[in-house]
Image 1 (cartoon, helix red, strand yellow):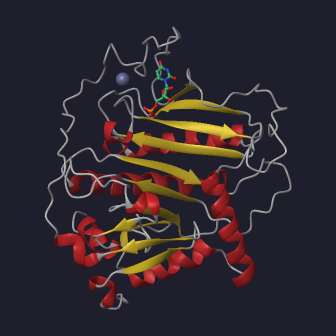
Image 2 (tube, helix red, strand yellow; image 1 turned 180 degrees about the horizontal axis):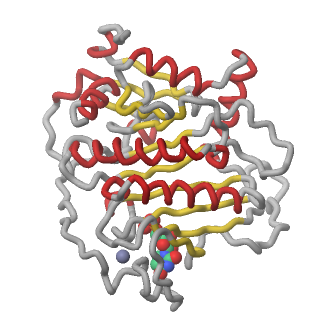
Length: 346
Ligand code: H2U
Ligand code: ZN
């Protein structure tokens, strides 16, 4: 155990995010200021196992008239309101010669994945064996879509506070011919690190975090969940493999099992934090590039980000406004304090 120097607990300072290549302002001394902000209503629990009005429940009709099958485990369908389309005009070009009006074609596909036929469950409430089916679906979908597209984004919006449209446990997949901003930044930073130090950034990072212990929230033989040193959101976490793996499709059978187990464990901790079904946006990042093409993946480490909006209760959330919009992200509670609160709920 190798605790952070004391000044990090008391004094304003900036921390560098090596994955994005930017900074976050940490202001530990502000955590005690009074709160007079809005208090939202929590969405009540007690959902039925089946909701005849839910567009994701088995057997129900969706907005466009398609009918879901009586699926028994997971179910995937093309998003009826896809943001990306497979057959877009590929000749879109910048409308004028100035560098200030730039545009580009992009093709893609959007899918919705139901984690369970049960309307009333969330991932941490599901059995490990059923979470494992979700892991398998993530992998099968990535295999299929990464054969055609440069980037495949697996993600889940959970909770209405995160814009999730329906409490039925589900996630989404958006695949595109272009590499979006966040993974493009991670591709660049990991490559720079690999070139400079001759090892992958996140394998070095996970090792240092496990040694330090302080920010580790959950750990098993294969996986580690930390509140990253550079976390922006109050209870942000990073799920990291303890072995070298560039993409989710390369996980072995036992690594898929241990992934399902750690997801259940730490998402349960999240739910206990504010005694609520904890909202977040989560997503996987792995090496971009179409499968079968000769892409360099050596600098990449697979990982998942969890970005929960809540700050200090089921209803008080952090806003990214003012200084965050104009300058850079800022947080009051330190990542170490956040990790300590989460660890206490194991
Ligand atoms: P959320 O994960 O944010 O809840 O979004 C669910 C997606 O489900 C959303 O992108 C799609 C929406 O377009 N959807 C359908 O594909 N069919 C429907 O009948 C309703 C919603
Ligand atoms: Zn449902």
